[in-house]
Image (cartoon, rainbow, N blue to C red; front, side, top):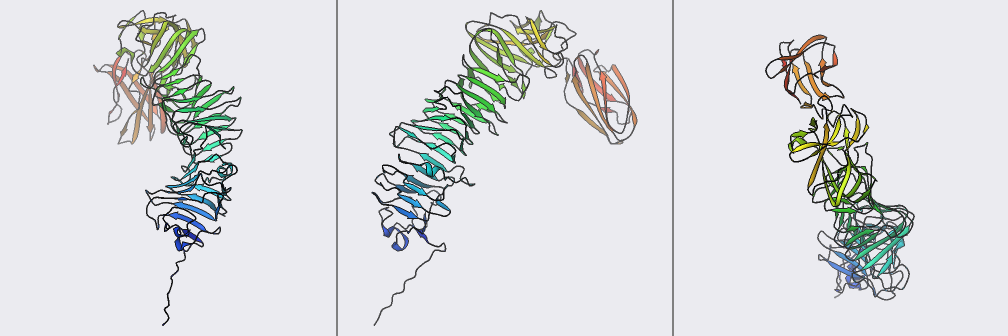
Length: 609
């Protein structure tokens, strides 16, 4: 009797696809029993390492010694929550040790997958990828050898879905040069584990560097650069301890960051060359700065992002702060400090970029003025300190200074809109203060001769002088105080004031400063009132939309019912605008009524200071 044994051979629908089943139990690539069908992959095969047959996390090592493997493509694709690592071990000396010929992605690393090149070869490039390397989000390629990597980083895929795929340098050497010029990474991680906990990476070039997600330097890792282009980080910069040297030569680099910066204690951002190095924040959302280490030497910080930035820790700058676009938010806890040699660049005629919150300048000395580009609510309201000695902290407050003190001495009245807080320390701090105004936001500067700076004394606002003015009444300008040589140890308060009752209302303002609308149902007409001060007069503007020509009769009455003003106007179809002078009105509340129609339009009251 002849026994016949039938074998069923399963052919994968993808031609030449080979999978790992781990049957050999030793984690070695060259053990045939570890592969489906107990057949080693051939150079024409597409190899897939996944959890179809082995459900746990596993690691595979290619052969030691001078033994190479070659495949068409390799895909590492673990199941969710699992890790699969393919490793070229330090015992491997072959060059190349791993080859993927393609076409297509020679190496694809999916989420949870790791390809580690820890080759112990004496020279050359242990990994040869003919086409390209695709590190999908959550995948990781670890360059864990001192051997060449330039050809590998040159073929990293830029396809969608690879933005946060990690390329990690973990080279077992005290110092290594890495290929950065004209390279594009997803997420870039610099580590020092293989070097024993401390290593320095260097990179140079004249072409840009792009990191499409995060740049991270791990514990004990430093980076030293020699570039004359842009190093763009579209995600976050995470710096542990160790140093980032932005320039070690005469070349100048812009490190542009579109996410957040997190620097741990012991971290240092510096430069050691003769170039001018810049950190540029140009993200599309508000960027957080948590700088617990140090920024040193000629390193500038430039804000040029639509939503600005926020300090999440105190920050001390050594060289230059440039505010081009976007507000820099600070606080008493997270204070911005400019060191003695640090300058500031901001456009005092623009509100695109300024500091919202306190700002400290240290080591002022001599006649060189210093601009504090501070502000609030999307408006810069700068303060300039001249002829200064000491350290000064300045903050602009968009609120009524009369809440700090209501009486005046030597002046007629002060602003009801704004003030500046100024703290000074150091040996005998002293200075002239130049306060800015910008109508209508400053509430009506009508006469520069009677405009004053005012300082809060003991319960009373006193005249701080007017030794110089700039600008134009009703527009923008400034007024400079007397020389102040007695700053107290606490907070000092300054605001705009007037020496004459008939000028500089600051504001004799109209509140609420909004339109009030009401519709006559019978005529389908809408009436609105907008209140605002002008340069030398106080006006109410009536904005009236009408469906037909007609006459209107308005009266303005005080709270006692006295008619203060009557206005008769002829309106035309469409939009109409009329201005009513109320310059002679005493301060107080008033109502406006339209009395010519049956509906008797009544509007909310307005307040004249």
